[in-house]
Every structure is written in C-alpha cells, then in structure tokens.
Length: 407
Image 1 (cartoon, rainbow, N blue to C red):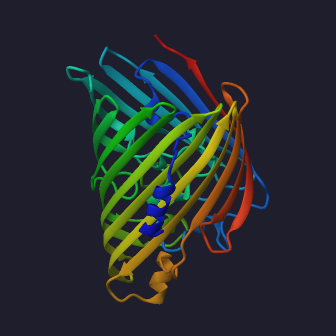
Image 2 (cartoon, helix red, strand yellow; image 1 turned 120 degrees about the vertical axis):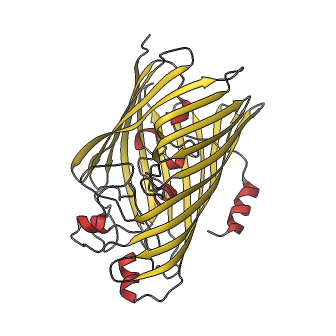
Image 3 (cartoon, rainbow, N blue to C red; image 1 turned 30 degrees about the vertical axis):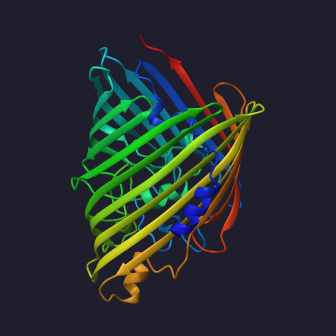
C-alpha cells in the first residue's frame, strides 16, 4: 500500500477506537487474578492456503516467522490467558501472564509475561519494568484471540511482527497527564530479531478527551538485529521467540537464513464518539518495515533488502451490548536481491511475488451476552495467499473473568 492511500485515509479519518478488552497496558497495579478464554468454530469451507500444505503456509513476497501460522478449520481453542499481578509494596509490582494455544490438535502452555515493575519519582510518573514483557508500542504486535476484536490474527500482525512480540529486557516509561513516552531494550528474542542480537524500541502516546470524543495517537520506532535468522514456525513447542526452524521440521536441512538489520516504524490513531446512545468506532494504523542484510542458504547467498508497507483501517459501532465492526488490511511487499540468484533460490525463499499485494477484509458482530461472556460471528475475505482469495466464516465464544482481588 503506497503512501498516497495513507494520506487519503488520514483525510477521512474522524473517529477511532481500540476494541481490545484486556490490553497488556490496561491492567491496574493492584493484586488481581484474571482469566481469558477464546474458543472459535470455523466453517468447513475454510482452507489453510491455496495449493499449499499447512506446513508450507507462506505469504508470497514475505519473510515470515514467529507465530504467523494459518487459522485452523473446525473447532479450536484459539487461546486461554491467565494473568496474575501482585503488589509487594507501595511502588513495587509483579506482573505475569500464562498463555495456552491450540494448533494442529496439540495444546501448548508457556509464560507470556513475567516482569518486575517499579514506580518512582516525585509525582510517581516514572515506571521501570525488568523481565519478560510484551511490547507496549502497538497492540497489533501483541495479538491474542482472547483479547482481540477478531479471533483470527490480523494480516499486519503476521507480516510485521510474527504475530506476537515478547522479549526479555528492560523498559522505562515516563507518564505525565495524558502523555506517555517509553523505551524498551531487549535481548532480541522476538521477530524480526534473533536471540542475543538485541533490539530497541521507542514509543510515545498522547490521549485527548474533548466533550463526547476520546482519541489518542501513538508513534513508535524499532531497531532489531538478526544473525542467521530462519523461519521458526510450527516447532514442537509453541513459542513467542525463535525455536526449531520450519525447514528442518519438514526434513529440509538447508533453510533460508537472514542476517542484518530491520528498522520499523508506525503510527496508530484511535478515538471514539458517543452520539445518540451509539458509540462510533474506528482505528487507523500504518507501519513500515525495512530490512538490509544478507539472505543465504548452503547453496547460494545474496545481499538483500526489503520494504514492507502495511495499512490497517477499522470502523465500527457499539449500541447496548452489541458491536459491529469492519476491518480492511493491505500490504505492499518489496524484495531486492543485490546479487544474482537462481530461480530455485527465489522459489525456496518464497520471495518472488510478481507484484502481488496481500489483503484481508474482516467483519464481525459481537454480543456481550453477560459481563463475562461474549459471542461473535465473523466473516473474512482473505487474499493473503493469492488474488483469488477465499471467504470463510467463524462462530466464536470468548469468556473472561476477574476471579478475585487478592489483598
């Protein structure tokens, strides 16, 4: 998606709102025990990819990794999330999150977050986190079905972040009035980096309320370094970083590897407008990712550059306990080989997309049946793999509960 479309949508942007229920940054610093479960049944017409095995699910023109795997057919546990927090002093706090995912008829459980948080300063507006945390730059980078608008991950989340960014490191946040600024310095475990190579993330967020309009604007930049990073999906154990590579899993001992730097940046605008008992909603996000380095396997190598330009736009409305929403996503994927490579190398890397631009349209109706139970009906027009695309439906249940406040 070129920059002209971004300016066009910016000009018509009027109201934006984040629909996530339990975002990482929304948990209060108090003792708590929260649980989120998302279960979805999909229609039988859903396919994991045109002419592709689920183990070979690829977006033409994109280097993929992390947790970017296709949605499954049938009834599946999208995820279950248990969050716990304990305030051990007036300024000290421990936050943790345990996540379970189901994929390919197997369920795996792991620690998603576990960090120590400390608040300080004369006005208590400095916050220091140390441990394993999910990034605060954008909620698109920390997707979970149990806390997201849709039960399927967004195209933007899969292409740019490998669906989920969780890293071990240190985070410092400054907050004053409605303004936040933060820095995260991590080990580099999460996509698009590789372990022990390091990453740094800077972000700001400003919130504004004017009469019936509530809005915010977030800006962020990130730098990640990779050393012989390979596709890490579909390993034996579900992970939020890098594990067994996909190529080896399939018996191919010659995986494509990337070494180099990736620089990313994004903007997220959101707001809500209350009018006549209706909450009008929308969201606008634009992200650019650029990589510069080397792509190689045991047979060939080339100096390599890419640029991924992703746009996500959501609109919706909420009345009583019902929410309807529509989301459009598209991306432009550019890959440049600075050395001569064979057609076989291009085929092995899945980077010859012949100008194909993936897109995805998602629509949903959600009903908050009770305080803890949400039902949702979804429709997707998915052109992630090819221009023909496919339509499929999903019927989902999401349950969440604050079990207890532990004092």
